[in-house]
Length: 302
Image (cartoon, rainbow, N blue to C red; front, side, top):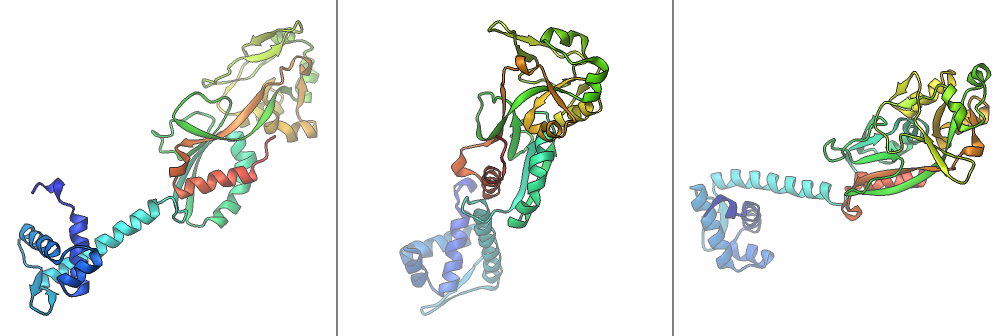
């Protein structure tokens, strides 16, 4: 019989039952098999292994020394298999390493503050977080959940929306005092507009043109940055104008550290935030499912 045609786990399970039951008939009754089928299976197993595993008598079946050693190994292997299946089952206790890729502002403002409670609630989960605004391939990067801002491209990913924030062009009072406050989008040609150094789905800044239409400007400035949090700090330092979500900058705006400009020309576009993952949802590992539910429970972006 070819190796791939042998169900060795089933053979081990039958052998263990025979030893535990002390006979073929008792084991057959537990396994819902005929005694003849159980006897033939054990005979094939012994023939394949080249050793006798059981002493047979009219009243009892007991393991040989070789059979006793094999029995111990079979019990361990079957227990390991049961454990692996329990851990992989979606109804199991949430445990294991949970890999999250999260864009920097969301991580700092929203995810980091709620992590301690999550870890206390699920002590068997180890959270492994990469904080970056770069978009990663979940499968290639072995990421369970990616938290992304902006519109989502069609893909095989499943997404849960966490909220959205209105976009705004912002500058510090110091910058505006030194360079003036732009009154129309045309004035931006005389200002330092900070951009991102990675490919974005919306690389241009959109504005209402005041005539019922839209116009778009490419940010041109003396600094390109890799994440929104760095962009925010550069704006706070008075380096230039930035375009960021109000959900990221609401505290700075409320405190007067950043000032929205060109609001009459703001198209009021929204930047949505999603938790994306490889689906379908019904087959999610417990560690992923509980984090998604926790984000929905705790995050308030609107």
